Figure: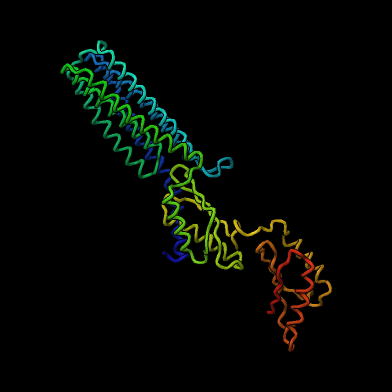
Length: 398
């Protein structure tokens, strides 16, 4: 594992890189989607026109499918533009979940497309008289469509995986669904020319099931993200293992994760080896833990670390013990008859096991006389016993 200083530095660099990549991410999504939209428009015109000319109802329907892709392309562009907005007062975590919501919509569109294709195919399967004998070159138009749409799919899916965009992934599968419907056209036209018109319907049902299944998967994953479903158990365990390697960490609990667009967020309570560490050292451990997770897990963009001196799931909490001002006032009253109380340099409070442990720092010269230190300790300890919230008093000389 990298040294803490290196981890913190590399973690900060990764955060900066993620933020700097936001404009590039939008630019790539925009370019990929515009290329797909241009292909969709060209193919829609060619398939609808060619379908009418070739007397192929399936090719006309396929052209309408391509035309519907333009609507989803516009949805992708709009969602990606809105999602790239920087965090603001109303959306402190950013706007990435606009993409998530749009992905749900695209998943539903894929399900509806699959259902529509299946319904039409089943109707034609039981009404063979509705079939027409198309011209052979309708297959050529459909084959060209398959090639272009499959190319758009691969072009889009690469960008989706690079920038971890479920919205772009959904649009990629939408492109593939158009390619699949064109394959159905090829099978249907070929079958019709050979006198086997029912092949069109059977192939369409299979493709419709594939499209609907993919739409369901994308919609389900995005809905899970919207309701803050945690990361996969394997990834959570990897995060736990990485945190346990941090120097000073004894245990951890309340490890919570969630997904927000392309980034993952982590919340965790860390239990320290030494409950008496200074605030600054505890903060350093928490910052090191945060940076280490960001360094090791590229999806993790932010980590919130809560430092616990003891396990607050098992130990009674002292939420009613009062803060420093109140505690010092009570101790001052209890020590009013202790002469050395006027020489106190510092009081340190440790809230442990549901009570308060007190450390009192006094000047070293008060303990220089033979046997002088012990009576002083006893006076402070005995006087503090009057306060039921105080479990221990330690007197230090320095």
